Length: 76
Image (cartoon, rainbow, N blue to C red; front, top):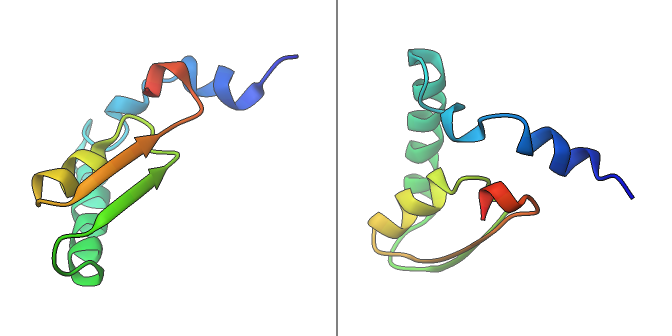
């Protein structure tokens, strides 16, 4: 059975989505700022549909314990 979601992400460079230009970088920075406001202290975080893990890595670098998962083999 064909999984259209997996196929779409396997054929798209998701790892470039939040870093390839200034508007995409701004999206990352805005989301990171909101996460910083909402998550205080050191937490254990489950990032479902983490994709390439840009937010997982960001949160882990902040000292959180992060488990990331994704449906696509490329994202894992």
